[in-house]
Image 1 (cartoon, rainbow over the protein chains, first blue to last red):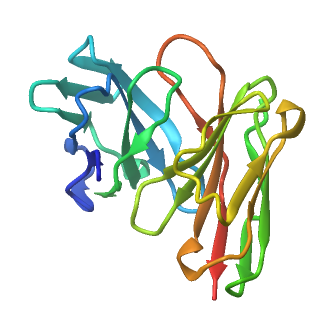
Image 2 (cartoon, rainbow over the protein chains, first blue to last red; image 1 turned 180 degrees about the vertical axis):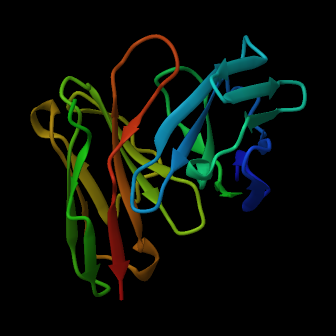
Length: 112
Length: 115
């Protein structure tokens, strides 16, 4: 039972344009959502998070949007840079401090 | 601050052999996690420790996997006997317990290949 799904295995964008990565979840009990970025041969690193009491959280070039009714969240990167090329994982948990359930990941490639 | 340390980085074994992975979390982080990441999939939680007690091991295949965290600091994850489907990257992560988002800091991982 895949409770967190990232339906796009890969995404390619031009430098300077917007990257939009999508994530869907099925468990209505999830109330914390996070995005992690992973470079090859490294562990995932935390990028940005959002609580279910919000619908948007912004940190520099990164913005996460949450649509609870649709059980959907997205990560926007504006403007995209070649250094953003990595695998992005969406993750969700029921409460802070509990198990994180990860999606399958989306490989983002930003072309110069 | 030093990150999460893991060793070995790479291990190749034959099926039915045993293997052990070691993790040293960030100093002061009470919560430690072991995740399994199979190629093309997201990380899956195997076990979560709070200090030296197990909080969640519901997804740990207990017939072959074991983990311990003695003295609430370092942790080891053991697989015995290994199967082909255990080929994966084993990620250790740690976090502080507190309010707000549960932000885990991951190590670089230990890549296991079972032949």
